[in-house]
Image (cartoon, rainbow, N blue to C red; front, side):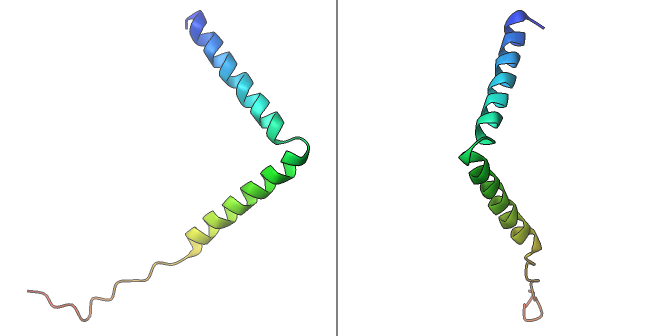
Length: 62
């Protein structure tokens, strides 16, 4: 692995850690938590909704 690639990976990991620390501190912590809870609830609702079955009893085949 080249030195440039190692530096790029290190910078990527460090920036991800800084972003996570920034999102999970202070007032942003509650806002971030509420955002993820709202998105998770939306995903659960989308999974739970049943798709109606297609009724082909009135379909005419040629």
